[in-house]
Image 1 (cartoon, one colour):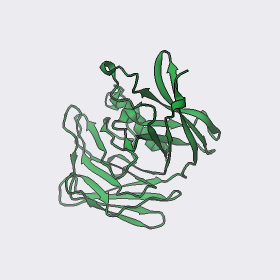
Image 2 (cartoon, helix red, strand yellow):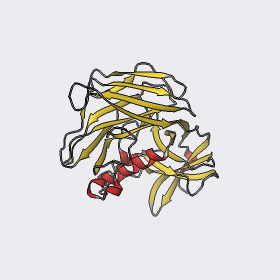
Image 3 (cartoon, one colour):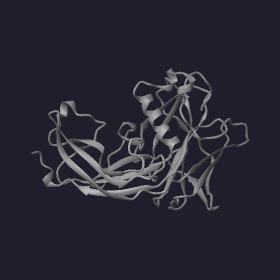
Image 4 (cartoon, one colour):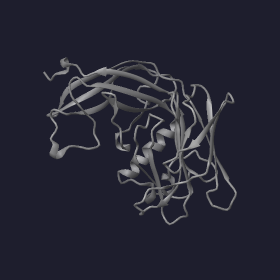
Length: 299
């Protein structure tokens, strides 16, 4: 737990399950000194995975966190494979793997960041370790066109076997090949506490708006809208409990339940060592797609 009360603001989680893309991640502090912020993910998808390193900014500062250049970044697996990172030429503080690489389920991965955060001429070391869960086999997904209390919507149902352990999941989507998640409010995370070890036989996973019935004057910009004939791709990440808590705590901060205004017990989860904040996680992603068919018409 952090010693300072922090407010975590994920202003734009763009393509959160696509490691090759940039995520905008800000942590705001009160009157306390700035701290180093390390955030990134490593998945089983072959990609140029990214780590963002920045400095926290005052809570009421509207400017985003400032990226920290000149850091040394690497990831080492429990099998002693080492993945080197290089600094992006145009985005300060963004570091990406030199080659397209992929993590392996069942291995642990340790992130090491060496950066002169306090500008004393000596680089400090920050580390975080994450274990990659086994991937989840998805049998199918189904999208049904429903009428819920007079509102026309689409419901996504999942068919898959949940493992016997306590599990946590993160879902994002593509519609017709384009990622549609662009904010923390669109991330879907869940725990298996109510169906642990059971077969998810048409479990309701998410709800989407109906593009044909939307009132554009009252359109929810944070919602995904579908129409008949759309191809929808689900990417389901099998995440660790700490990352599940981290996302939920960040979302609470955006919805007015900020840990900045809470008690020390509500501090945001982090696995970054040496006083750093943020989160490094690795997890497998299982992908499956379906088409919104004509038979999904309302009765």
